[in-house]
Image (cartoon, rainbow, N blue to C red; front, side, top):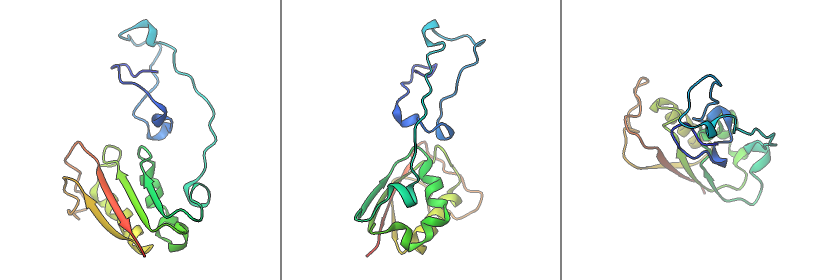
Length: 149
């Protein structure tokens, strides 16, 4: 369904806990009656990234999971070399729209380094700020590159 402001809701918003979309209270006034009761929910089987989606032989991984990459990269598995199997290169979109604390991004980067990756950043930002209270001040996300031999 479309969000009430007309924004198209697409497949990439199917991870409900990471979604910016909310069901509308039936008593709320909507811009159009056609927006009422058009949400259809479907059960979808998901596969965990480590021990599931990531398989042997994969050397390049691009993570852009609408905020789920944060949980993946903060997991204990992400700090283990063996969890990444044959992966040598990563491209990650870090979703500051989902997690604005720069220190959380640094925790994820420490996990990658512990797993043997060298990490690079691309984009405008204050990613160098290690103050625990620092918040990402920009309306954009950050691209992170990582490589290991």
